[in-house]
Image (cartoon, rainbow, N blue to C red; front, side, top):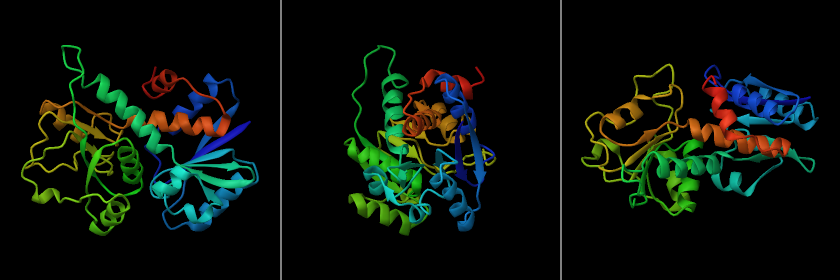
Length: 279
């Protein structure tokens, strides 16, 4: 019996149990995926849960807000990707060491490329030449993974965040410019990525994009928020004629990569999508 789970707080919105339960079934494995809601300041709870991974009771854990960075001090080592990003979303035992990895970055990039080559395809069927200038909203753990993926894929990244000091730390890692949305009059980015939780259920009427600011002309919008399925940011972007998507595809991709780390099995993506869409 394989025991897997998710650390975070709160976790009522999580689709991870559906995804990983479907992955276990698709790969013919007996197991369960549990939610472990641990409050932001409950380090004792984190330590106790990680001890269950060390002793083999739990095969692996996912990590989400607000623990992607504060679990690092409790781990034995990080993979090069997690080390570079400075955030962990996947925990497992490797060669006797409690190891932190990050599948958010490759998961995001895989889904972004799929989005840009399918949903943004014009009626002619030819893929329009698109620049690689992007604006990333946010500077937390998810933003760290997004920026890492974009920079290493050759994108020209600009940051904007409500916490200037947090943005400065992330920007300094890659020598990136920072902008303030309140000062913008015209956005000229090819891609807008929201890595903040603004617009997430239950605050579905919130959006990280200012009402006074027009969307980038001929740009695309990628919102990491996936609950609700159509966030206000995505609805507004589509109303303005832009291709836009939520982070559901990224959620599926990062989950499948984490599952492979824990089990060595590659679950079919279409099965995981069916699981969260009620198929």
